[in-house]
Image (cartoon, rainbow, N blue to C red; front, side, top):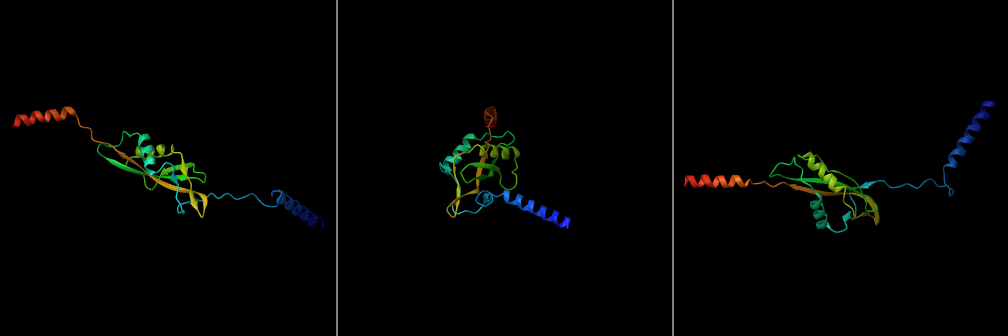
Amino acid sequence: MKASIKIIIIFFFMSVSLMAQKDKKGKGKEKVDETIYATVDQKAVFNEGDNALQSLIKKNTSMPASLKEGSSLKCPVKLTIDQTGKLTDAVIDGAASACADCDKEAVRVSKTLVGFTPAKLKGKNVKSYLVVNVDFFKEVKEDPDASSTSRKKKMVWD
């Protein structure tokens, strides 16, 4: 008999503690949609346009010393844009490129970007991905002394 009363009291306190976790209206906390959408009705865009985005990236990108002369490289960066248009994350999209320093620089530059319009799905702003390409091109530097010596050699052979 005493054991059954103890069990009833334990269940009573458990039910009271469960009811105390609900708000005044009897509902639990509102769920926040943390889904990051890859497919949306209208993708996130840079407010000033794609050309301005590429110009800003090019202006703020510094050329890594480890990139070989005469080589070009494209680093796709996957940006996460939240419901308010704020950039929340930037990572290399897919496999790392041949230049690890270029990947780091691409992510660094991408994290400085601000001013996005969020993606829309069924008329609501949603968190989504946006992929931007950061291009690297290192020109071959010609040695001015080397070209003058070749002329001298050419003159000798003539």
